[in-house]
Picture 1 (cartoon, rainbow, N blue to C red):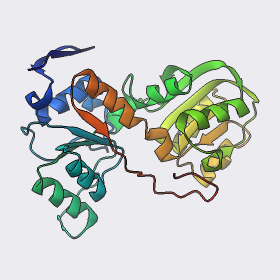
Picture 2 (picture 1 turned 30 degrees about the vertical axis):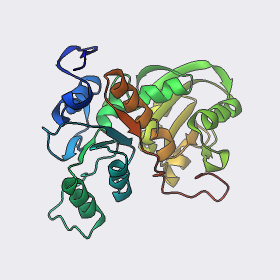
Picture 3 (picture 1 turned 90 degrees about the vertical axis):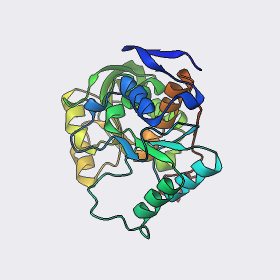
Length: 278
């Protein structure tokens, strides 16, 4: 039997080791680090499929859920999957097992694989995804980018925009050919805003906070026009700004003795003609 876990909120009243932990306890563990009440109203975090009382053998961590993810879990002896993007995001009226979603649910239930998803609660939490991205890029988070807690406004040592772009490519393991850049008006930056995932609608917030550069993904055409000449925007893509979720969750689970591994599946749907998608 394992040792009792500890975190900022105190000592947990249950054990974290091998078959001592069940799905409900895993949910409580993640909640203690990234509280579920922080999730935005439209989101669906927590248990998606499975029995909360099922004992956990091993956890597979993935950004997304596909039928291939469930098959990978089976092959690796993982009876639990944690994803960032929720499997059940919009209301469903039927489960058609010939559809992609229905096939995932059927296979998971047939093989007793529990699926949990932790999305915007991890995005906004202290020491969550936004803070992890900031640290990775040598930035110091100072405040949330918007009132709901999404994104961060960060300070940094003075750096040229070109050197900072190089750093983003190196740390996010993304080729320059995969970036989309909107030119700003500062060649040296000391203040950076960021929002992992899809954050184009927060460009005005980045400008209001006097950031000279903004890092996010999924920026739309007219959002880019709004930023042009006012703030540098580095669109590194939804996938590349969020894939560190897997490492973040792995660190938390391993700290508490939970057997886990990161999925080896490539879930970025884009192919870049100038390189990328190894």
